[in-house]
Length: 262
Image 1 (tube, rainbow, N blue to C red):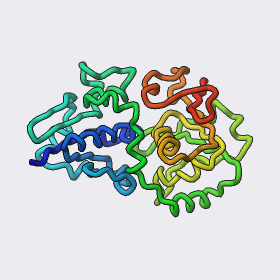
Image 2: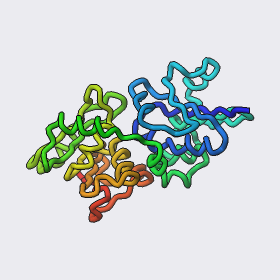
Image 3: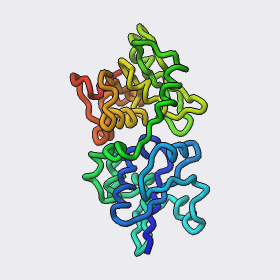
Image 4: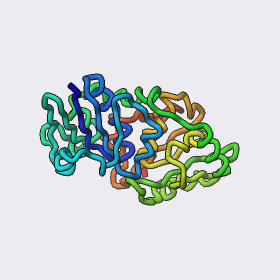
């Protein structure tokens, strides 16, 4: 008998990347996993391949599951041949939802806490980077021999321009800047070569940080790059606790994230 698991985490690119390991573990438990995504993120289905995990658009959710999916029900359901994991609504769950640790709480909800600390490992086999797309975008952006990659976009799916990096570190503009933007016919993953060759990466805490760590940990890229993460909320000048379950921070290690205080 086929066991079906429905995961409710359709957006927040970083959230999706961080929690896909839950889907992989569910497959190992014998489930076939349906993972709905917002339409703007369906491009992930062309880049990430996890046997047993199927990405679908939200309008393709089976009719008998739509009411559950569109509710704000926050408890895990486990039946004989069906399971439901509302990762999206974990903070509504009073038993495991921790406001200061929303990302780790998603793994706690799935009873897979220990697996949160190796969230990136599956991408070594699951993620496909397209050399032709990476090279074409590198040429399109006219990247020189030395440049900084700068991102000011935060949000899902279209992003919001925050000027966080620019307002906090004007010194970065002493060299060529390659600024992140939404490029038609390119996805975030097609920026892999630009990220790999960048001398420095400057970005608020967002989905790009997860992608950078995948490149570093799974593909041995960005070896000569320095990484600077900026608070998206300037009222929280220190490393937010919720980020400590996702990333390693340091002030000295060239290959670690440096958190820039306002």
